[in-house]
Length: 237
Image 1: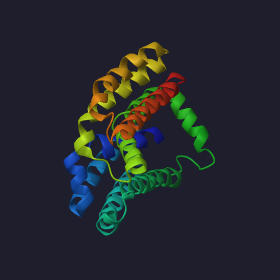
Image 2: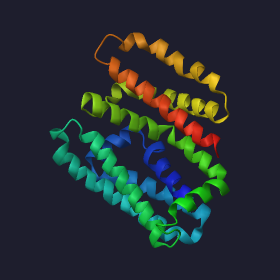
Image 3: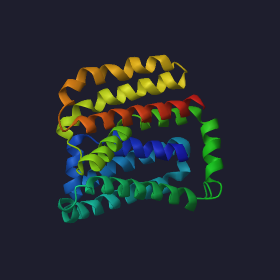
């Protein structure tokens, strides 16, 4: 159930959250409710696949997601204009709250205890390898892209990401990280540069020598590091 709930969260909160919905949910409680309802449906589906009796806890996780995101709309209206780092801080708080709710549901349902959490995670990775691999590839797709953009834009530019600039790299970057993770996991390290370097070479003329150079290099290195790290973890499963 631990891996299933993480997969459900990543699927609902990233894979099934398109750009228009992301904009809507950040400014409208109705948008937050719409997005939260998608997360709720996905969470219920994943829970039922593992343990149908766990549906009530999945329902509580989904409802909590709606409440957290709706509350975020109010914070966006009040605090967003005041800080260039708001986007990064808001993302970190948002995800911390969502994962905390998932952990609390797992603890309260008796599925796992706080002391037994590390051992349970290791056991589930070993016994549910397909789910764990799916989680790894899920992480290197949209979630990695979102975090990379918010982290480096926040730290380097002190602003939220410019999705008009980076949006076109969403799927290309996800595919690139997925291939790199696969090559690393299977020990084919020599193929990593074959995937990682072409985009750098082709796109560098657009960004080198202007105010986007540092940001572009940081994003590229961050993307590469995440893919290699996930690949190393997958290779040890």
